[in-house]
Length: 264
Ligand code: ADP
Ligand code: MG
Image 1 (cartoon, rainbow, N blue to C red):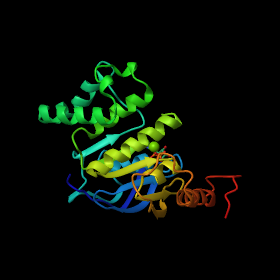
Image 2 (cartoon, protein in one colour; image 1 turned 90 degrees about the vertical axis):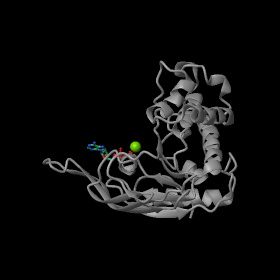
Image 3 (cartoon, rainbow, N blue to C red; image 1 turned 180 degrees about the vertical axis):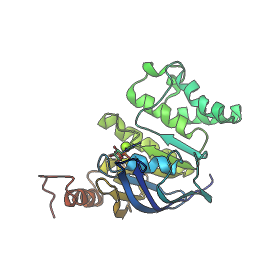
């Protein structure tokens, strides 16, 4: 796996700049992400997390500042990337496997190679029985895991995930989180994982950027020094609880959370 750093330098976003009602979605952000690092961005709804991700992917231009992925300035859609959204975005008329193989078809990759990697990932995610099923014949968790396979099948060196587990129930979410960690440990792509779940961010990340309400800026940066692979149930570890608490305190301080007593 090629290791790819990501640099966000003075990046801000104003929507409708040339209108009478410009809207500042993001203040100037600086983020430096190491090759192979797993980073999360947590923040309240509307603080600009998706906007940031789209700018890193090169799908939305920044208003100021520069984005660099690997040794290249981002000027348009980047290609060595896997992108995952909350919605699994599987095509209903293709089986699970054919949805995954589409990634290779679009990128014109070697068919046998993509098929081999796809087989490996279906096996690892315990989904062999699902290959020939259509999305509507799969549970929500299975669909999201198929979508994860499609995101990973071309072995991207960068993974951008925007609340990918947002639509899943709590148990399935734990399972997919653990699966994602295992897959990441294996090939170590650089990951930017966007979530509003503090527990999920602490469970997965090497480092967490905490964002303020709109217009978003980074208010805290936390190195999560917990051994991997991390247990599926983390809540009982006092270190885990300390990280979670630190982030909730930030949200409380910024007025995102009210009426909740967080012990000092
Ligand atoms: P988050 O993902 O953190 O919930 P978003 O990045 O989706 O937040 O949005 C940040 C802010 O920018 C929101 O107030 C949203 O309404 C606004 N916004 C997002 N996209 C656009 C757009 N294309 N045009 C105008 N405003 C937008
Ligand atoms: Mg969003």
